[in-house]
Image 1 (cartoon, rainbow, N blue to C red):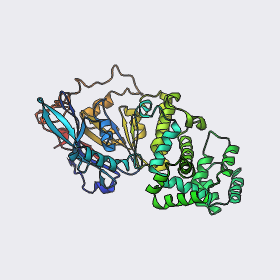
Image 2 (image 1 turned 90 degrees about the vertical axis):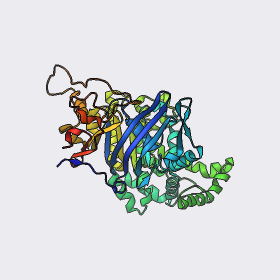
Image 3 (image 1 turned 180 degrees about the vertical axis):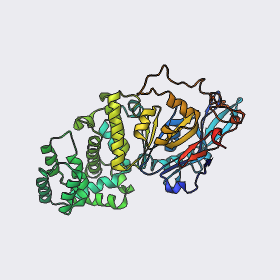
Length: 469
């Protein structure tokens, strides 16, 4: 039975991310641009949701709103964004106000409220939600090495983990590490076998580090074993006391941050964490399939190819083990071969880390290959959302059908591809009702009213009056 879709109030608790009625506008000289209007969707843990649509339809702005990275002229006018039960848009309306000046609207922001909201997001951005931007050459810092940029994520969000790694090595006698290294010779690089062997020695906290070293494809097997033998380094008693405090408190105390300004203290204490962060950065680059890692850590973005820069961006995104990764057209600037490698990499990381992904693209073929669920956006409206198999087998909205008809079939020749007549309407003055009504071959008078979300089958929701009866 076709019925109006109900948005469950408990969705914010059972889903990793829930977006409800999101509206994003930009204040410009020519008026207010309604870039995103009434967008709602959910992402479960470990799920990949694709957002597709033409350039400028609002896909990226939706993602930036989740990260609270909307530009200075943009405002979240309405709606809610729930992440792990926390409302990221709570009191966001207090951040701005619109005032009339010289016969036009001007956006004024409250700096105090902006700082409060930013302080809230700093704890989430990078640690719990990460983003892979469309063009890494623009997103990466041109004057900092790749190693420093990845390390920065760890030093901001994951210091306790770095401290715990150093402590784990310190607590194991050197002769035991030598025994483990000797036992690993000839066992291969299977993660399960390595973990079982290390666990049998009674040092489970070393599992991650040894497994990561054995997984490094840029080193010969003999070099990997040598790295394991050299895991234990000389760390002074005072440094270990500092690291144990960091591990227990979950952060670097304010006292140590003050003392850390002294060069000698920095080398003794904080320098250990920086060195460990660089080691983890090498492991992350290995995880994303980078070669010649020792050199890449010291290189700058302009010295890498497009595919290597994108791999470095993905390594930064997964550094703090986030629950959600937003991938904004991560393959659009790459050739077909590198594009396939990046898509394969994202799929492997999702499986291995159980990370949810919000995947943004204008390529329906890429979305079909990578996503579990897909939402179609037109002129700022989410017009259809369904499981990937349902959308391709049974598209309902006329715009979705038009997009799929524009894909060339592989099993037969066609005289011409389908096209959608007309052009995208102005978002400064969009048409009333359904924004697709000026191009839709099935438009009626009722389309002058905004259609509600209508569930045509479980998990398949469409905004179109054709399915309201």
